[in-house]
Length: 272
Image (cartoon, rainbow, N blue to C red; front, side, top):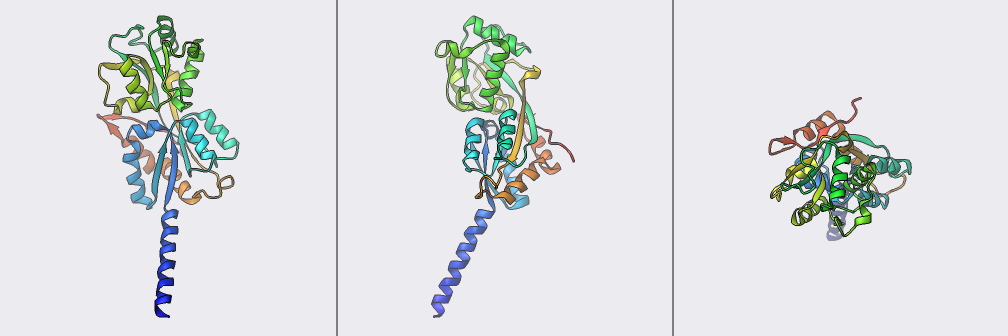
């Protein structure tokens, strides 16, 4: 009898422990740029020390991250395609979207600069020159936030690069780091977020060719997944994480993350 009671108590404690472990962990569906930059490696231990909550990151393109969250495969969404984020909330999948931080996009290219765009701050003009010259351009082509921005920039320049797909315009279907590696390997220009570029180690003879255009602004948002749509979501822990990111402590932590003495992200959550 005693052994049965002991085993029952042990089983109850084990089950309680599993429940507790589940309560103290969340999944963040995230863009690859924040992961590639090393930001999470810096931020998440700080958050866990404060909250006891373990954050597990799934880093994919923004389009895929949104689809994953719509399939209830995450507790928080952290991406950078504002129109798609607002639609995610309007469709009831997110509780609220909050501006979190920003940086910018840049076009990087080889030092030989075959399109003659080095030093330009007019991104539409630079893209037009790349297209007119037939210089190689490597695109992520993956419906990520970076790819969405790239396509909007081409549209503003009045160029449809996909009509030259497989010629001077090459679509990798890969994340940012892999696309940079591919682009550098073929001598192609690449649009990338600045944080990934600063953290990227395989630069070879590449440099920033185009920067400083207001149209290259890159805003990130954070959205807790709506438990009304996804009953399995860890809503309390997800909200705790989102609240911390936009708090004074979280914003200070984001501002404090640097690589090669360069700040990668600039916090801009609204203040109450």
